[in-house]
Length: 369
Image 1 (tube, rainbow, N blue to C red):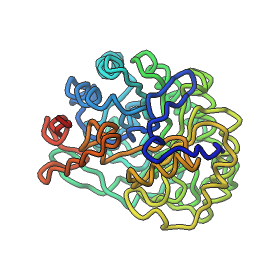
Image 2: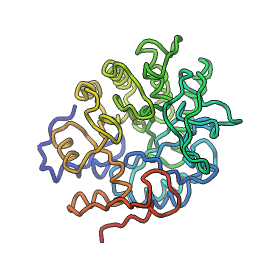
Image 3: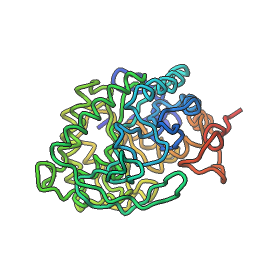
Image 4: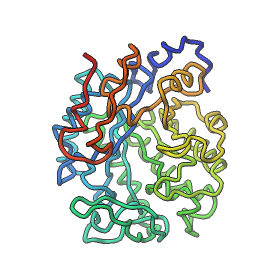
């Protein structure tokens, strides 16, 4: 755990911070936010390059969750990182960020059971640790919100292939110009659903005990670290968030084990969602300090942080970085607004924070004059 910095609150967020070999300009990160602006082939667009380039003043951008394979999709127009065209067009995004002096990681994911046959090859069932349908919905362009499709349980000999998909996606991200990747191990998606006893009812080496349920995530992390280096790998976890029907009866020992084992792999940061994503931070009792004591890298926190809360977290040493989601959507120049005490933009009432099409509510939020 970092020692208390004893900085004045106004200075805390604007310390530089080392992230592996990177020297970040400040301790603010842009959280990964699904915006659904990829084209019909799930290829990044010029509009996406403009969007991320606008936000490059933040210490680290974590780009939106991106599919590791053709079976990993669960939302309309979310990008992939598994075809040459996707890799090539991501280069426009990373070039735009780097041209502004920014740094950018790519969050890579497999949505698992949070999907629909509409997105799957040959309309097959989505995959999951166990054949338990998610009590959630998916938005399909042209059809609106639909219930998640019943998934099928992965065969044990299929798991290695998905580990390799994550490994290749990480390699592809580096080819696409990213400074690193973040594994999406949260919010009920495939890696997270293997962790939790409410979604993992397996009786083989990937189910039952905490050690077995954590095996898949740790194998993916090890493969990605082996492929691109620990200093270019972060992991996102949400110990007590019930988003997307993520259920766990005893999260404290589970996530202490996960973090203890991740520490052995030395990922450059852990990105911890505190509480219910987008909701109350105290929905379930959880000792985050105990979790942090098990890890020696950069500790990034998220979920509803205001400027004042973030300053306090950095100043008192409870965190090394703080990520912001919705505020980064509406304030492309958020670091300047925080530093100079400018008011924040209000969200456009006619533009959704997630999804949407075109420029409005995406690249047209104003900057400080």
